[in-house]
Image (cartoon, rainbow, N blue to C red):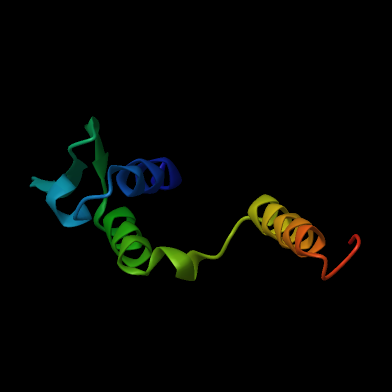
Length: 83
């Protein structure tokens, strides 16, 4: 649930703090109005969303893609013939 909320918020490219409202003892994300987050879940999201996006690291598939792209670029420029 927290991963889904984080992904949706990052996709909005807005100040994430504006997407949360206090609802009694829980927190509500305006993107998921029916969900109520506990204080612990909210604090977990705060830590994740406060960290720069590049600090989270790239998924393995993105790293592999970047590596292959770099090899192809070097090959195209004549620096390397292949991987």
